[in-house]
Image 1 (cartoon, rainbow, N blue to C red):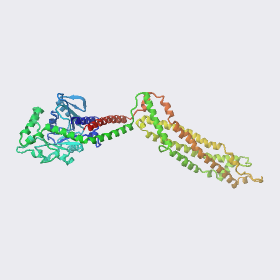
Image 2: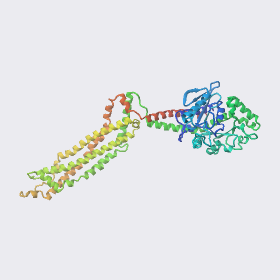
Image 3: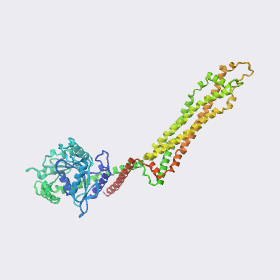
Image 4: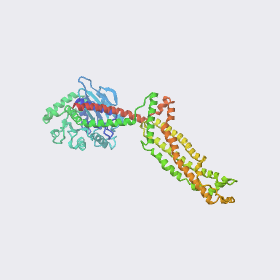
Length: 610
């Protein structure tokens, strides 16, 4: 029993140290899954006296009004007989308190540090562990006393604030409610019973404690309540007799108080038959046994939560990536590996393993042909323009057989307009390649981990693409210029000759430039230009792929790698300057994972030994 509760105490302390508890969170945590006992009662119901009786020490602040203004998570640890008693606070981990008057003062001081020297409350708990041979292993949460009115110095909302805080603890399905009610007041008005009934209507999680039995009016007793006749709970009521204020003032020790309590129940005729299950000593043992029973029933659920959380933590840590080495070689290796991962992702987009590369084909199959079709050669080859260019090309000497220079000028002025679609194809592919860089960066988790490296890799990749675009544009436009600089002679040799065999040499210059003649020239030029368009439609994609796509796959980060080798350790460190929030998150997750793995191993051991 003691080992099981000690294990839960240990896990709870670790959860608290890591912030893995549910006081201020609606998310299920290991803390929420571990059963604990929440002590609930109205002001002056005797809560503090009950807790001190269980511990056997005076350690809680006392006074009028709201004394408990922050939850106190109290963990009791039974140690070997003869060992010295001591206490430890979570906020003072390396300090042991052997003077319990100092413990009381520290609780009051720590409360004031959070709330100020006022009568305000705070939901931030104080965590106290007490180690003693005179206690049972137990975890109790002492909550502020429920009240009905605000006193001077408190806001009107204090009544509801305290109730909400109490509810946040006792609403949890794994919380055991220790409801403290004074016997010298009508049970129907008990704040503890009222709120317990609301959150636990069947009484499955509620344990009732009746205090101040010795202060009841003469002629009255609490037998019907203690026997469960007046208000029945699933578990028997326990009656206790607290020390009086006079006893406290006289520093009557707990041993004498417990003896007096036993004598009261065994010597009072009304309670003699119940004496075996009355008193603070019985209450402590009963709570410890009950807590152990509840823990045993919850072990499968706790194990399930632990296993599920371990998987989630491992996944999250994997997503955040590993911490980087501190030496220059380790940093350089890490950067190179991350860049290779990015480069591999980028190539997968181009090769069709990931989406995006197909858009490049769309440029060649749809955008480029459409742009070529939109070229208005008919305007360039209008009668007026043909006559103008032919006449200008002839100069003072009209052509004799065919207007060769006129043909060249007409073809060149038409073909040169193909530079526009060719340049647009280069720019379109460049835009797609650039988009894929950003996509591959976002899909490389390791780059998200290091903003400095992410920016440098993105810039280096985009700069490489700019250089590739310049080379591609130069090569692609040269294809167009080549078509202008050298015409395909065979095409024209196959055309009918322009001179009329046996023609009349006395035809005037005007006749030579008649509409029929010019239309035939325009038709021949258009046929040639269309042939060139068909050829460039095939060669432009080849040039673009060779200069841009192929090079992006081969050498996207080559220059970056060259420059990387020249960097010093400090500069390498700046590239791996991880987001502080990510570093903190990884550290927190690693500690939490260590906690859950330890809890998993210990819970598995307990489960197998049942």
